[in-house]
Length: 99
Image (tube, rainbow, N blue to C red):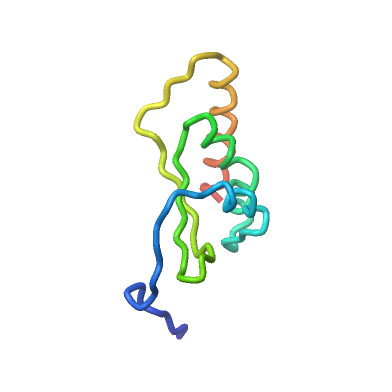
């Protein structure tokens, strides 16, 4: 059986991704190709368009341990182009989750 470290034994902080963190996303891997692709290719676009907020957990050495995003409560889309971008991203991510 795999030994696990209780989260209470790990010192970490939760914060929004900084510009430096975002520039390093191409090196981040959570071990899931679909999620890695989202974090490396789609995350910044979703944040820019205010679809989600992005956060990370960092250890005391300032290394990223985890990345997660929270969807905004309400999404207002002002034009058809924004609607199509969101729809494309959502469909892509739903297919990834169904696998």
